Length: 204
Image (cartoon, rainbow, N blue to C red; front, side, top):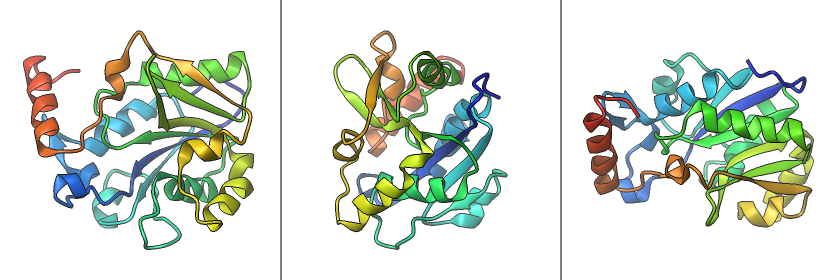
């Protein structure tokens, strides 16, 4: 549970098509004995008050992890913002913390830092920054932005950064640990990260 007085929900974004993974449901791909979605759930567990999985396929497989599973409102795979909107509609929280399903190096310490940054200086949206670039799918955002997001998607827009830059936002500096944002898009990247895990005896 978080120490902040605001209630925070977390969502694992696992609703993509994963074309570069050959169309596999990326969240259910295993690495070092655990599925990618399990790494994300583990990172969120001690940080948020409730957890949601956003998935557009294989709902029964995702439901076995014990958390609510919500799909995008449409079946057209409209990107991460569509999953974020679905999570906003289903959660009972003041803020929503979003993490992708394909960053197995992400940890609870990093996510706690996001929450601490909100406590230190409130904003409508906090975005992770690795010191070189933003990682816009690692977000902590005010759930009161739901109407804004609905309107943005209804207009046909899909770019995350274009949306949050319309609001009071700031970045959170993670230049001391940029590797936690390393994501897996291809079988080759999966093999490389798995080799790293196994070299650490299965730990991060």
